[in-house]
Length: 97
Image 1 (spheres, rainbow, N blue to C red):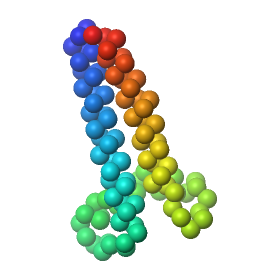
Image 2: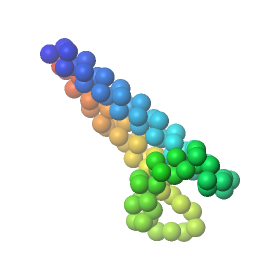
Image 3: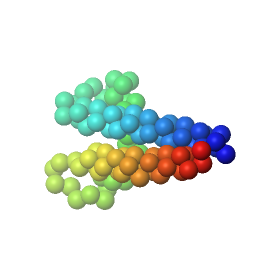
């Protein structure tokens, strides 16, 4: 059973790293929105393509008041997933060892 525990621990760490990377992509996207970069820049296009499928549905449901709070909602959701999902996977991995 320890192999399954180690596998689950590795999955938990991988999910944690992916969530941290996506958090930084969201932060960079939010910061870039303040400076209005060139929309044809490949980095800006990549950031837009990666974040827009997550931000768009949240943006539709939030009341618009001139400030886009969708990145903040996504960041809070990422923190929740890190606190709940990753820790639950880690706890399950420890129990299997």
